[in-house]
Amino acid sequence: MKKYALPLLLFAVFETVAVVLWLAKDNIFYLFNFSYIGSAIALGVFLFIKKYKYARRVVQLLVGLYMLVYLGLICRENMQIEGFWYYLFTGVYEAATNHYAVAKIFGPLIFGRGWCGYACWTAMVLDFLPYKTPVQPRKKLGFIRYITFVASIVFVSGLFLSHVGNIEKIMFWSFIIGNVLYYTVGIILAFAFKDNRAFCKYICPVAVFLKPASYFSLIRIKCDKAKCVECGRCKKVCPMDVDVTDNSRKRANGTECILCMECVKNCPKKAL
Image 1: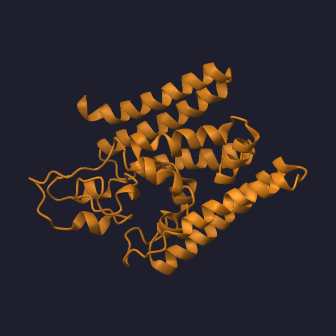
Image 2: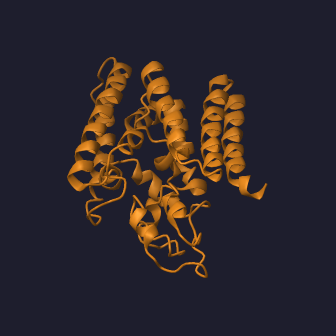
Image 3: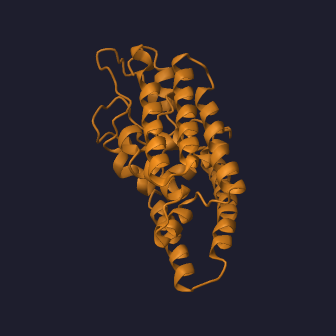
């Protein structure tokens, strides 16, 4: 049963959050929401252990479509970073603030950038593009994510300072427009740089939240140096250019690991 410890741990974490929020907020939605997401992620990890080829894609679709279609379009919740700022400024603890607290601020202390690999609805689409393995060296454009991060704060702050009416309607439409822009920019960058994850590396503002906590992540890829033959295959297949052969937390692009497990699947000596 030891090999199933990880999916059980992930399910337990999400179920704990589900029950605590359900009881604290007296709203059964939280029980359903986090139980569903936790179950989907645990299922994906279980399928990976069972060596199912598309295990991660299953989770991406289950969680990504739920977040985008059900919460975003049907429930009209802005689940983008602008929605987080909106609820934070209004002092209302709703879906977006819960989501960011669990998946993108405190959760990465446990599962690092797992959100990016298993739940992000933007990456869900980008990962179907043809450049799953970067063709070109990583570019020094990561500073752009901080510009988009600040721009999101300025946008929401401007709405509040301007005292505009129908701000909730504006936030809903900003969710739709924001997603269209994200997909458009992401697809253009993927083909321009021949890298499906170019958007994640250079543009995505959410990474500003994810990176600091990911440095201390409990769940991370480690290398058994006794087995490693330094063939370099793991570096070639990594979509985020992480040097997983270095067990130090200061390894190259260490806070970029999305736990996609491509390195683990492709290691000929099972050293990862």
